[in-house]
Image (cartoon, rainbow, N blue to C red; front, side, top):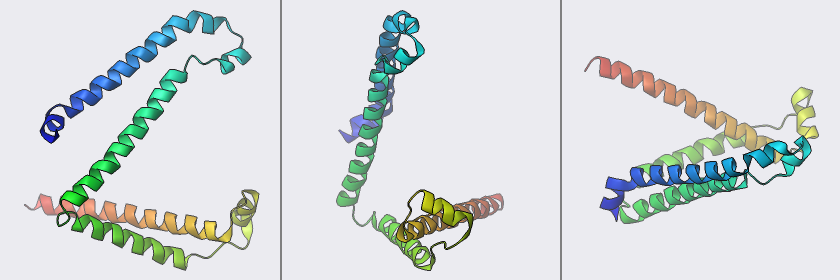
Length: 156
């Protein structure tokens, strides 16, 4: 199965996407004249686009489930090889926990007003702050790693 998907997986995924798109366009074009005759309010009630939206959601969920299942399968079948990835995820969790612990809830100003308007608790505020700080550090780290690797490649 692995060799089959390695050889034909992208073609199958592309073919499925094309097939869903063709069916969606056929459904749209078959009912487009009736849809255009509806008033604006009735167009919002129409179900002409439901197949396309449902198919897009289903394909997205299918892709996410397949990616997660494949990752778990690879981790189980090759635990030694997945050790680096697990260490990386652990380091990411540690960085997040540090930023979460250092975050303090906002007590005044416009940010506090927005937090009150959206009923954001202090713990949720710390979670958001920790997440944003972690994302910022990871973004800066990725940029630095990119520049350093390009400079190293320049001298190779």
